Image: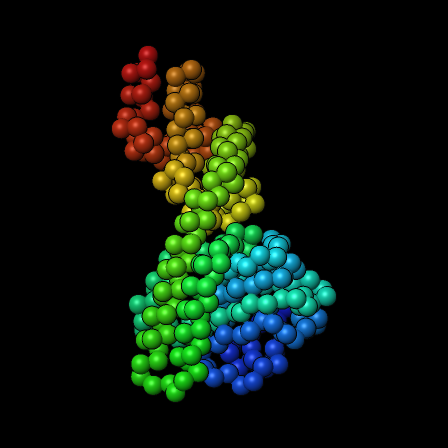
Amino acid sequence: MKNKELHRIKTITELHRLGGYDKPQHPLVSIINLEGLENRTDITAVIFDFYVISMKRGCDKLFYGQQKYDFDEGVMAFLAPGQILRGEDDGVPHDLIGWMLFIHPDFLWNTPLAKKIKKYEYFDYNTCEALFLSDREEAIINGIVDNIQIEYSSNIDKFSQDIIISHLETLLNYAERFYQRQFITRKITNHKILTRLEDVLSDCINSEDLLTKGLPSVLDIAYMLNISSKYLSSVLKQLTGQTTQQLIHEKLIEKAKEKLSTSDLTVSEIAYQLGFEHPQSFSKLFKSKTNQSPLDFRQSFN
């Protein structure tokens, strides 16, 4: 990517100027209508210093990170500050409709939402993990966004921030609910992720690479599955009630039990084969998962 293609937008004023919009009505919050958005083919990637929430239709040429996503349906996507959004070289699609809500982190300062917003894991999802909405759900979200726009377009007073924050928190909570609904309605897809995860974990734990590379991290596993670690975590919580790390450890303990019961390897040798630099760490994990030390398990098995 050429440097001139990447543009960082730090203020709402700069955002409006770049898009050819009028002066913003609020310095820290803005909603932009995407219909008729100016085509800037000189800028194919943008870093926003804002939280960005978008609702798009008719856009099949947007990327988030390395993932391409088809926006033929109405879907929501969420970006945290500092993430890269890029499009195709020919710019903005002609039939793009929808909106983008921009919230500068300074607007959240000294409010409970400043910390709470970090708990919404979907800000770290990839675009390919975006939120599909029913017509009813889309109407609910659009109504909240309309209320935010009405509020910041009115005379700003001491109540404005609290009211906008309240609407924003309601929007985020609805998004959380709708994502949970999406996990349920996409059971087949999510179970395929679980099946692929089982295969990836088995391959990793049975690989000789454990000796040299150590245990795979959650990020490693997510990368091999080609999904974000936060999305993987959300799917697993819905399907199994466990985290990715817990499933990694579960598979590891299964392999450890196999080696303890079918080989004459010492506990230290098994620990090293399973990617542990220190045997004590392996023994501690084994006991926390089985309530037995590795030696006690071997003796009870025999």
